[in-house]
Image 1 (cartoon, helix red, strand yellow):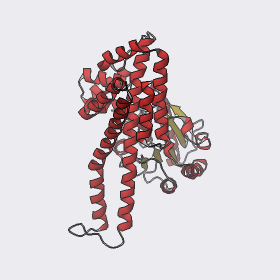
Image 2 (cartoon, one colour):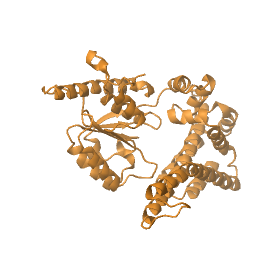
Image 3 (cartoon, one colour):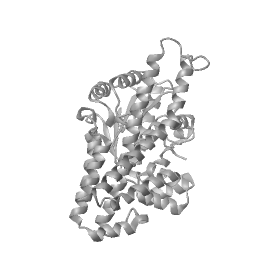
Image 4 (cartoon, one colour):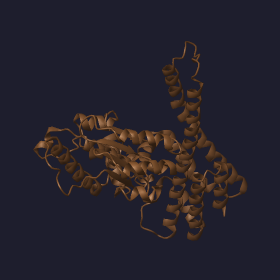
Length: 400
């Protein structure tokens, strides 16, 4: 299997990255032989991958990082880097390669301290003699100060360092940074391509794979979760019933509370799965005595971990709410499609009766206002408005 196999529906991007990986390999080969570097190389030191959620921008960055570290003997015979089997490819893809740092955050932002640590790492020479690769999967979450720290590293890169930045759009990255990167845009994969991957790679039944891919409109990770997690399917079912529950003020407020409570429960489940393990590992690393008694001077480290876990719970709750709002937007998009007699296939065929009912009882103008209300709620959550307040305002607007 080649490193590009998980990159779904992105043939143009794959071609560009494969060509750059070949030129990067030629640069390494020339340097090792003491020869002049080839001219007109497609390789550069900084890349920016953008695309809508689920397009696979982080997957593309990791695949490119693996291709840059490929040491397959077939390269000498004209084969393209990125075999997927050699030590360089394998260790990159599983996250253990000494010269590849993959950075993702489960917090709301990436600060100056973390970015400075990355910049220091980027100045090191590659231990394996190829490339020092930094994959920043959430470049849109850099604070302004962190972005300015990164800018200097991108402006004056170390000779064999490659930055791979990922963000939803160009506007999510500082103009000064994006102007120094080669930009690649990924598209939302076709539903059929996502369903095929779920069947082929994850062993999901074709009918369920097709339904999950259609319901998530080509979002690979969400489709996989929907197809494999019964709880995710149950939560989505609850969300898609909300449009039928906002006929009066009481129904609006109750639906809003239940939506926020469900997101909080999601965050609690993640905390239960991760927080206990993290806490025990830190206690062991700090030398906790039997019975859990901590050595002197370790209270600060424990407090820092607790604060980080609290921020992660906030982020998880907001992510869960945003996912619910995305499903809600898809519901009203289907309503609008019926009202406008569009030939586009419905995403939420499992609730077609509800969609047809609302489409019949309302107008396209009203449906558009409801979609705008959902989008306004998402923006309010981005601005750190209290979740319950934002969702209550949305449900009241859906009633109108």
